[in-house]
Image (cartoon, rainbow, N blue to C red; front, side, top):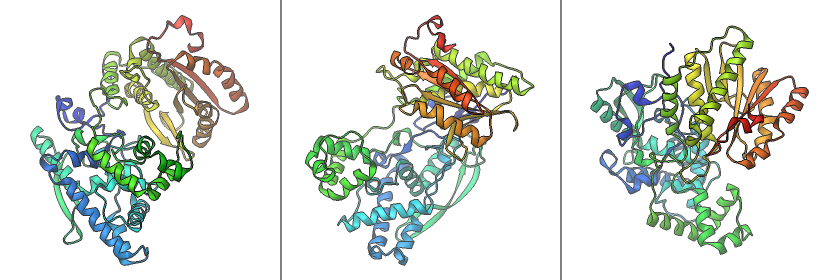
Length: 484
């Protein structure tokens, strides 16, 4: 019998009451798309995080001074010093962010540091004397997103997250290792980074330390962000939108236009920040789990305990059958064992596509573990990221895309993306798994078998569609001839 798949911190370290604790229980080999929100720290400084927001603001106040002294000269020593201080590589220890293949992303680096510096200089050049919330830089610069804000917050407060994790590890008597960080805390008075040493648990998946984060500081997006600023302006600053963007009705606005709106309407931006401070904000709801970040794991792990499917294979043809049978086990789980409920919200709206992909990973990874097969999520194949790559050695490989039928790029995913990924990986067979939520979805994909047949005749690949009926009250299989 194969070893059970264990991804969460609590599994690896034998903690039984993790879900009842105030800290987030991370997955150790895939990132969770949550971010540290400095605004939530601002509104809820407790224990080791008392004074944390002022520490962040103090750091960026120093950066403000350096950039102001540079007068915008990118070659000056002041500007270079600011960029050096703003180089925030991703904090892999948190296991948070956008990177699904493991827990290491691109990080911020020098390029992002320059973008943040440019955003702050833009604010200075517009007459801003300080930022009460440094995440405002998102609405001054197009390339700064929630991952960068989270990385910056984590790096500035690294010593606090490390001490917080130390305390949890000590409470549970976990095995730890002494870890040294050259940039653990910034001393504004001395204008330099200070080092620190901490006893931390180690992530067995990548050999790096683990940082734990209080749930109260995590959100899918920072409270203050460009889209939220736009929405505020739609509701409260109609004249500013019309004057700046030349439109009265907003549908989808590129971020460059939001930046333009922010730059040309500083008063509106100030009113937006005041509005946010008055309204406050809430962390992610881990109980309801509206984005499907958490609940898939326990449910699919229990499925693995009860089923433990072993599907033997010794040839390439049998390996492909193994993948096909694995996907059909997922199909059965969703359609006949209540799995569909994990990708619907309580208000009877479908969850996002990534929730279905996590649920798929949860089931199929159990099958792969039982059969000594590797499955990786969002593998970069050079021309983009394929949803899943399944392999048993080099010569037995296949790619799988999992898409919602309602995805506006659905047909492009089938007829352009998947063939491109197959070509890049030199893989012959790919599965296109389609999640349908509504009768309208079924109508939309009614021609899928015909289009796949044309595609396979035209290209040197074997693309196999499988339809998953995730309607909230799925009909019997006899009514779904297409879905077999």
